[in-house]
Structures are given as structure tokens and as C-alpha cells.
Image (cartoon, rainbow, N blue to C red):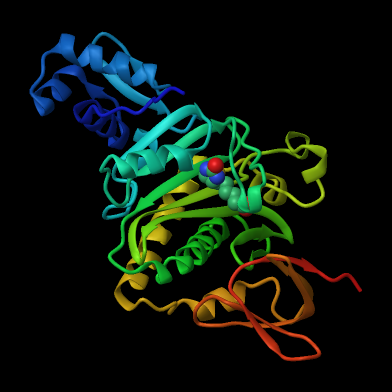
Length: 330
Ligand code: BTN
């Protein structure tokens, strides 16, 4: 496990100044702006280059050329429009699971809004004990630490809000059909492109922390998926036939998520339910729903204001809070 997190604020400020400038900047100008000498500036430029940025510099001028393709905290923080989510990011080249790292950070006192991102995971977890396939340079594996004041009964809705936020962000990058498959998968053209694994730590009703883990398939090709996933999983790049800037997508997701989470903290109600319903891939469909040892088959008729799925079978309308759905093929 290796952290490539940079906490060098000055280096970041210099990078952002070079990046924001429409033309090349002179060494002298930058040294004056940051009150540093030319030798120091040169060291900073070398550091920025070691992060993977392409910077052109001659003996007296500097110009931004390109950002790295890998996921680094500096790139995600650049022009990130949130108040607190993602203002502090720890990035890793490889880790077992970002949810585990986030949980450790949360226990050791890191605040709400801290984000962990890995370039790849060796033991990425999905819901129901499944594996989340996490190859490098293709997807995004993100965990967000939350420490809300509300009680644990309000926690499940956070997963649905993460799915809504991811769907809203994905919609900005593709014209294809984006849906949410209850409880919290994000689909493009009916195939899964994102999933949420929320893990709660609480004592009785008091929440210690919530870790929201988000896996997104972004630039995978069909060959990147193992055989058993090829029929059911997809990526943004496959569906929209173009490469996606992963950092930009993550930024948009974090921005949407902060907005939805802030509303929820204030109202403790899913005021977003109409948007969730209209994105649902299940409402009106005949489904089989497995929950615990039980299974029912019926019609998915609605999602209620707590995020529960309402399923009508021959007997009655069942109100189901979590489970695994398959659509019945006619
Ligand atoms: C699912 O659809 O089953 C949920 C998948 C969640 C995967 C993400 S990737 C980042 C975070 N770390 C993990 O180990 N899992 C979640």
C-alpha cells in the first residue's frame, strides 16, 4: 500500500497558478508571486513533474502542458466546487479496499468529508460479499468519510443519495440512458457501471461514522471485464464510445453528493425521491426480490419516501428495505 497523497499546499498553489495562466509565465513573475527564489521554484517544478504533470520550462519561462492520467489528489482538488467533501483527499496507487482505509482514518479522527481514492484495489468489496473488480487506470474506487449528527436509522438513505449523485454525474458525461437499479446500482443502457457499498459504525443509535464506498467503471473496454461480468457490466467509455476524464467525473460526483447529503442532513427526509423514482430501472417491472432467506416475485410498483421498494404480489404490497433484484424475463 503506498500513499501518493501530497500535502504540500505551496506546490499545489504554484501548479494551479501555472495551470490557470493562458500563456507561459516567467520564473521571475512566479517567484515574486510566491515570494520564493528561483532555485526553490525549480525544485517545486520538479516535484510537480514527479506527480506526472507535463510542464514545459526553459531557462526563464514555464508553461502547463498536460495533467497526468493517474488519479492524484491535486488533480481532483483543482477547481473542485465543494465546501468540505474532498477538500482533503488521500490517494493510493494500490490498496486492499478504500473502505478499510477510510474506516481506519475515521477511527483515528479524520473529519467528515475526507475522501480516499485508489488507483486499484486488490480486495475491492461489493455488496453481499461480492468482489468489486478494481483494475488500475480504468475505473475509480472512492470512499467518503461521513460523521453525521443524525441517528443510525437515517443512515440507509445515504447509499441511495450516493447512487442518485453518481447517476447525475454520469449523465453529464454521456447521452446514453442512465438509470438507478434499486437499491443503489447505476446502470447505463441497462448494464451496471457503478455500485455503492455503505458501511456503518454505530453504538446503539449513535453513529460513529459512515463510509460510503463508490466503484465506477469508467474507461474499461469489454476485454477488461472478467468473463462472468461481460454480459452485465459496462463502462462509461464502452457505452459512450469515448474516453472519459476520470478526475472530472469524480469531481462532479463529489459535488452532487455534497448537495444531496446537505439537503438530507437538514430535512432527514428523501426530498429527492421524485428524481430517484424517475431514474429507477425497476418501477413497473416484474421482478424477483431476494432478501435474507426470503424471495418474492411481483411487480415493483414504487419507491417510498424512505427509499424502500414496494413490491405487489398476489397477496399484498411488500415494503422492502434492502435486497437483490432480478428482472423476470418474459
Ligand atoms: C456493489 O455494487 O456491490 C458495491 C460496489 C462498491 C465498490 C467500492 S470501490 C470503493 C469501495 N471500496 C471497496 O472495497 N468497495 C467500495
